[in-house]
Amino acid sequence: MSLRAPYTLWSGIYDLGVEHATEELRRRSLSLLGKPQEQRILLAGIGTGLDLALLPPGNEYLGIDLTPAMLRHAERRAQHLGLEIDLREGDVQAMELPDARFDIVIMHLILAVVPDTAAALREAARVLRPGGRILILDKFLRPGQSAPLRRLASPLLARLATRTDVVFEDALIEAPDLHVLEDRPALAGGWFRHILLEKD
Image (cartoon, rainbow, N blue to C red):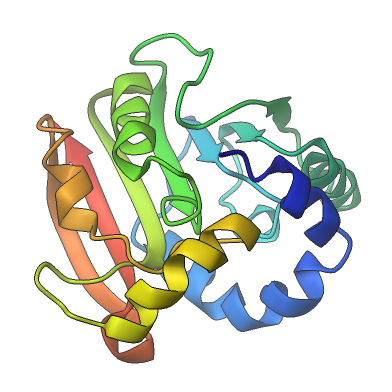
């Protein structure tokens, strides 16, 4: 199931509902990286580019998103900021990128959106160099957490915008070359989490 069509509709109003609500969460997430310099950084699921104003300077950036309408917003934002970034249409579950290309992969609010969380995480690991890091901000259930309302709503919400029943640990099992460096609650009693991974 592709979310290109609903996100094409959302693209015009996406920032109104998400930008201010997530700015501080994004800032705290990116702070886990410190201040990298001269790194190749992939923004997987870049959306409208809400991370762009918060990125440290002096790096090489590539942003990928499934939805051209979202990428057009990201392009305008990058131009306004004077930020050089390569923007490409693509599916984060199957990226047309070489192995071990990036030092850092940023995955903000994308792993609970894609139909196959594990596939997206495996792809991020594939394009990451050994010793590279993946930065995640998203909403995940804990293993064994019942959360009946979130699980009940997920099939409908998944067709419109996002899934609400994703268990991160289930996806991580399928990416055995990744290990957790940080896992902190971010919002909503720990439903949203800041996670930092490293590739062996």
